[in-house]
Amino acid sequence: MTFHDFIGHEDAKRALILNAIDPRCGGVLFIGEKGCGKSTLARLYRRLLPEETPFVNLPLNITQDALLGAVDMEATLRAGRKVLQRSLLKRADGGILYIDDVNLLAPEIMALVREGQHPPKAAEIEEDLAANGCPEFILLGSMNPEEGPLSPHVLDRFGMCVLWEGLKDAEQKMAVMKRALSGADAASVAHRSTKGRQADLPSPDEKLKTEIRESRQVLNHVFVPPEIYDYLAQLCVENDVGSHRGDLFLFAAARAYAAFRRDKAVTKEHCDTVLPLVLLHRKKILQEMEEQHRQADAHREDPEKGKEEPEKEQPRDAESSAEKSDAPEDKTPEKPDDSHETKRESRDAEETFAVGEAFKVRRLFFRKDRMNRDLSGRRTKTGSRTHRGRHIKNILRENGDIAIDATIRAAAPFQTVRGRTDLMLIRREDFRFKQRERKMGHFVVFVVDGSGSMGAKRRMVETKGAIMSLLIDCYQKRDSVSMIVFRKDKAEVVLQPTSSVQAAAKRLSDIPVGGKTPLTAGLVEAFKLIKRIRMKSFEMRCLVVLITDGRANHSLSRAPVREEIPKAARLLGTLPFCDFVVVDTEDKGRFIKTDLARDVATFLGADYFLIETLKTDHLTGIVQTKKAAFLQS
Image 1: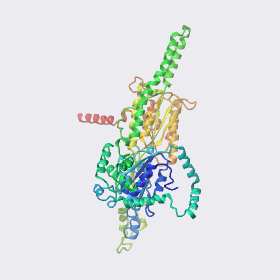
Image 2: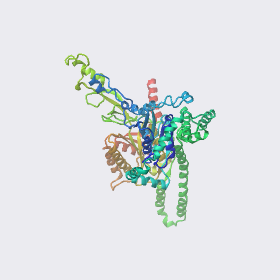
Image 3: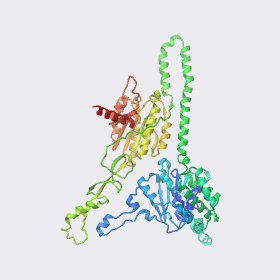
Image 4: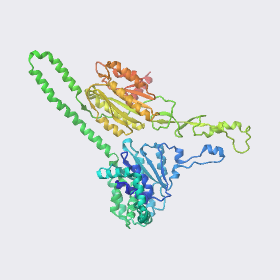
C-alpha cells in the first residue's frame, strides 16, 4: 500500500504533507480508536520524504540513556577512553520521530522528548522560517483516548491534531477490505504492469513527492500580507487559545499550504483551511469537550431515571393498596404476605443515583516487595530492572548498569599487585552494578455493591462520591482501573481494564441499584479478572477495593452465605502481589449495627475504612486533636 492508496482521512494526509513542506508546522498527533490505521498512515508517510530521511520509532520502554545517549561505561573502562552511545534522538535528527501510544509513555521520557524538539521563535517568523532554528525532527504521535489522557503540556507541543474516526461509508470499508486481502498479489500485479508501456509514468506517490519538493523551494517566496497577521491573532483570540505556540504553528501551516497550492501570497482561505488542524487540541473548550458532554448527559439523565421509576411503581402500590382495602375479611391473614411481597418488589426495583461530591483521599500505604520491575507510576516503591529510578545501593549481580565509583573503589587496592603503570587496571570481578528503585502503579479493581440495600437513605450517592474520589487518586498515581458490580444474582465486569478516569466515571454514573447482594459472586469475579490480567503482566501489583455494607443474602451454591464468604475471601487472598481495601458503607448512625463488612475485611486481611475515614481532613482532625491534648497535658 502507498500513501496515495490509503483510503479516507484526508485531514490527516493534509497535516502530514504540510509538515513535510515545512517542519515548523510542529508535527501531528492522531487521536482515535485502535485499529483504524493511524500507525499505518504514519509509516507510509516516510515514502514522501527523501530516501535519506531517518524514520525512528520510539519504544515505550526506552531508557533515559538510550534516548539521550550516555557514556558506554563497560566499553570505556575496557578501552581506557571515553566511548559514547549514539542516542535515539540523534538518530532521528533531521527526520521523523514516531511515538505510538504516546499517552502511555513515561512522563519523564516525554519531557526529554519535548526538550529535544525546539519550537520556532517569534523573531524567525518575520525573517526566515525555513532557514533558521529548524526542529531537530518532526514529531508524530498516535494515541487511543480510552487508554488514558495526555498532559496538556504534551498536547501543546504538537503543532497539529487530527481526531481519527473509523470509516462510516460502506464503500470505503469494502475498499479497505479488498486492498487488505489482496495484499502482495495486488502489489506484484501493479509492479508488473508498470513495466513496458507504463514504465515511464510516475506513481501518484512520486508525483506527490515531487510536489512537496517543489513546495519547499517556493516556501520562502510566499508573501504574508500584514492583514494576515491580524487575522491569525484574531482567530486565536476568538478560539480562546492562550498558548503562543498556536499562533506560530498556525502561521507556519498557512504558509506551507499556500506553497503547496502554488499561491504567491497567504490568504484567509489558507488560514481557515488549516485552522481545525492547528487549534483543535488547543481550544480550552475542545480539550475536554467529549468528557464534559458525557458527564453533562449523565447528570441530566440520572435524576430523570430516578424519578421515572418510582412513578412506574406508584400504580402497582395503588393497586395493591386498593386490593387490600377491598379484600374480604376471610383473607386478612394474607396481608402480611402481601406486605412482604410489596417490600421485596420495591427492594428489587432498579434506581440510578447521581455521583456525590468528591473529596481528597488519604494516602494509602502498601508493603514493598523485593521484585524488580519495568513498570512506571506513582503508587508504591519497587526495585527497577532498567536504568531508570533512584540509585539506592551497589550490587554484584550483573544488570548492565555499572556503578563507576563503586567499581573504582573495588579495583583500587589491587593496582600495585596488577602492575599498574598508567591506566587503571579493572577486571571483570571488580565491576559493581547499581540497584535502582522507582515507583509503580497498581491495577485497581473496584468491586462495588449494587444491591437494593445500598439505595437506603440514598447512601449510594455518597458511595459513588467516595468511588469517584478513589478513581481520581488512581489517576494521579498512574494506576489502571477496572470495575465489577454485584447485584441480583450475579457479578459483572462493567469496566474493562483502562487508564482513563473519564471512562470509569462514565460507568460509575450509570451503575443502578436494586436486587439481592451476591457478595460471593463479586469476590469470585475479582479473582477471575486478576488471574487473567496477571497472565499478561505477571509483574503487576493488584489492589482490590471492595465497597459494600456486607449484607450478603445470595449464595452461589447450596451452602449458607456466611460459609461461602470466608472461602471466597481466602481464594482471593491466595493471589500473589495483591492488596485489599474494604470500604464499609453501612449507616453507623443506626441503633443496630451489623459490622459485616469488617468481618469480610478480616477474612481478606484487608485495610478497613469507613467513607468518613477515607478523607484527608478526617486524618488531619485526628492529628490536631491529639496535638491539642498533648499540649494541654
